[in-house]
Length: 121
Ligand code: HEM
Image (cartoon, rainbow, N blue to C red; front, side, top):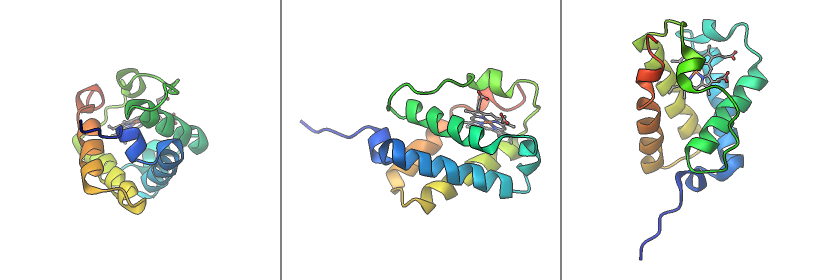
C-alpha cells in the first residue's frame, strides 16, 4: 500500500504554511500590479486569513473563518492580469520556502481552480 502525505503535511503543516502565507502577502504589497488593492488592509489580518485558508484547503484542520472566495472578491472587478500576479507571487513564496516541484504544481492547480469565483465576479 502506498501512502502519500496530505498536501498540508508536505507544505510543512501549520508552521510551514504560515511562513508561506506571510511571504505571499509581503510579495503582494511589493507587487505594483496588485499592491494598490491592499493599501487600506490590515496586513496581519490578511496574513492570518491567507494562512488559515490554505491550512484548511490543503487537508489540515478546519481553521478558516473568513469569507468564501466569491463573497470575498465580489464587486472588486478583479481582472485576469491581477489573478496571474497573485499566482506569480504564490509561486515565488513557495520557492522562497523550499517547496518541491510536485507541491508547487498542486498548489497552483488549486489556486487556478478558484479563478471563476474571483475574476470579474
Ligand atoms: C486564487 C487566488 C486568491 C485567493 C485564494 C484569495 C484568497 C483570499 C482570502 C482568503 C481573503 C480573505 C477573505 C475575508 O476577508 O474573509 C481574500 C481577500 C482579498 N483578496 Fe483575495 N484571493 C485570491 C485572489 C485575489 C486577487 C487576484 C486579488 C486582486 C489583486 C485579490 C484581492 C483581495 C483583497 C483586496 C482582499 C481583501 C483584503 C482585506 O481584507 O483587506 N485576491 N482573498
